[in-house]
Image (tube, rainbow, N blue to C red; front, side):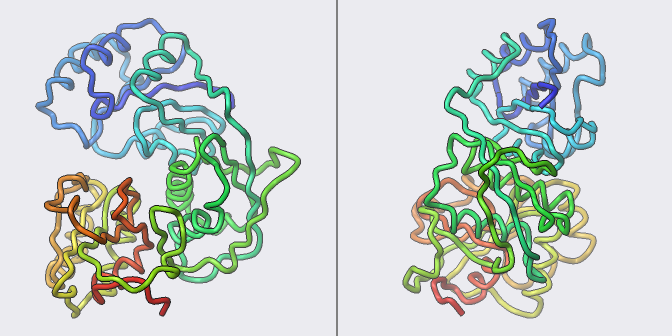
Length: 342
């Protein structure tokens, strides 16, 4: 890793004085301030930071649409760069060869002051992927299968390096999704072409399927059949244009189960507009879905904290949420249940 970059996502750090003081600091490391679509333009934090940014060269900040990882991709970070952020989805940059580390605001401030980051218990692990991915499975399917099958291994203190010809068929967007999801069970996940450690973990991708996993990281097929109260398709990993297209294609002319609610939240304003123009949102509305604003916070969905069973194709840190592929989430919305292998 050859470059240390700090990103301040104003909406996530959410500390006006801390952000402002970081901007005023003469730093020997790259500091990139990102004001993304999560933050209202009228936010007091933004107004304060904008005043400070008048003193900062424009290449050191970004103001506009897009998620943090995608904005950094557009900055053409060199492969091997390390990025520290308070954004829990920064791990997606592993898809283009960089390492994204999520830290607390306090860790961020300490690291920004020292120019270093330390994880004393960190371990380096490598997963070597072999064979070919089956047709029609997605990066999300692969991530879920890895989480389920390797759930007994503790990666919480590991930096995962992923390599193998199996990954060459994935688009850069797919690779970002894979690394982002795996970064939720590890410190970070990075795709690399080179062998990193002598002893690696092998993983056969040929039996990857569309699946769902419980919060305990076990395959959902081991569960008894149960009714689903709510299905959520959206967010960083579930609200891509590909996800919305798949949902519309499979739900055209059909209806959501009477006792199940379906909420759809495009990942960004751009994706929202593209999905609307393509007719995907109209199809989903006709099927009975409630279309939420872009980047809508899952926690704001009414009564979701009291529901017994929720299926989501985006990562949610809740005990009553089952993480599923988009295909499985669609199935659950139409059938109103989960737990049957067929």
